[in-house]
Image 1 (spheres, rainbow, N blue to C red):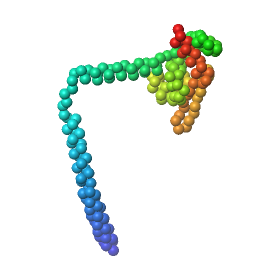
Image 2: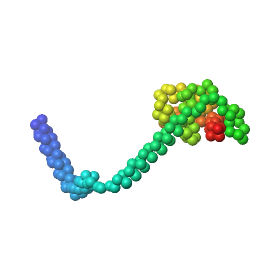
Image 3: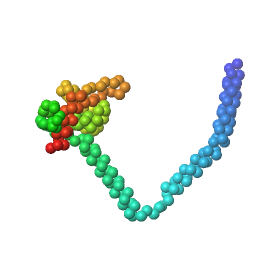
Image 4: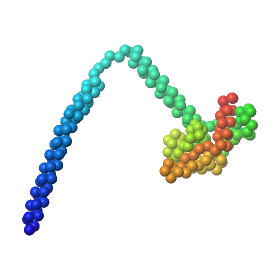
Length: 186
């Protein structure tokens, strides 16, 4: 009896295998025109990329100058984002009505974090973004943000999906706005 089941299983396996092979070959026959078209498109693209094109020197120089100006603009924007706030007491802009602003006692990393939050223009900034922008470790970012939160500069936002992020408090925002205004007027 054992031999009959083995033979039966072998026959069933062979028939199912043959049916699968026939189905696969039938599908491949249906796909051949599409595969050939894709292959022809790829060959055409490779042929176009391998073609040499004459470009006037003035056009090449114009493109190079444009790319250079664009890279300088990007570098300038990055440098402005990383600019640290100056320490010390600063008199606010006239007509502001607020008292003297003091950033005394803030570490350089704290000022760096404040400048990033100020540049974020009210958006929440998370640990990885602050770490990347300020070239600090994540632990340094968290430590600096805890100090700033104790001084009332930042609000902490906890989210189990997106993690911890921070924004400027209204008081911190007003202090930095008046500081910026006084630096512009000097």
